[in-house]
Length: 338
Image 1 (cartoon, rainbow, N blue to C red):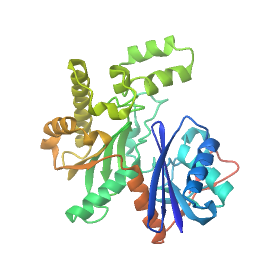
Image 2: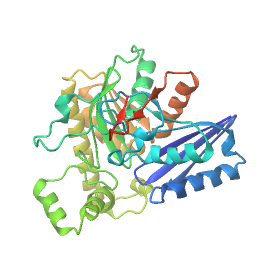
Image 3: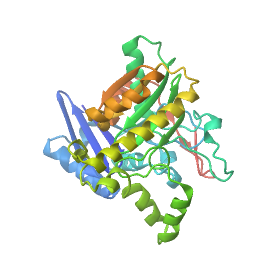
Image 4: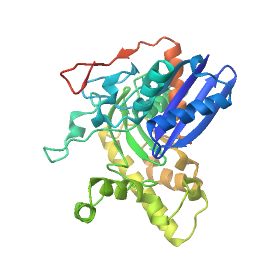
């Protein structure tokens, strides 16, 4: 029996296969098409002599249509609506169709959990989406609750996944009630600008030729890479100099402010602050960050990207026969129906 985990993150697709005593991981660039990525995964499995017919199921992450609770979902067309921008489920759908393999979505982000107060922006035409990777947040909170003997699904935590993208938000009693991501708001990240002054953003929009050019400028050509001119994310561990120090301290400043803001959502009663992601491996970065936020509560570290770990936990939940939710799609409705 083999099980496949598919995790799209920032510009990279992470893939892990587990079979008997074997566990192997690889990556592919997300600039490739969904079909090209599935073909590459099949070739990779073939090199390890793992037939696609031997896959028991696959898991991935994604976003839910409005009105649906988070949980374990069987992949269906309801996840493939264009407005959801669901790369994992799109790749999973090809796996399901081509290889006849069941695919499950692990704890997809749900607007139903988001506090209505957190959705209001100040402009009636625009709502916030609370689009954090809730499957990672909930995975980390479960680990923390188990480690500290806190009753399951009763904790109140601030979670910051500090990686190529930066996700910061609040889990309260197993519900992601508020959160933001660097492609839309909050601190800048590896390539993302985060929140920008409105007049400057408007100038960028007017200078760009189209919407895609603007999104590329603030989502792929900004952040740490834009400031420091680095080629690889791993170069962050060796970069030095006065300018690099200023940029890193600015990022620490912004992340600290964001965590502090989310502390008010829990009225200062957070049971802990969970820091995860590749940036947590950066010793000076994380030590300076902890110095800024430790007065808010206990700080726990989970170094490295936690996406595949969260999906691996999801695999165990599927194998233990946790109830699976079926997301249906009505022909007259643009959204999935739970």
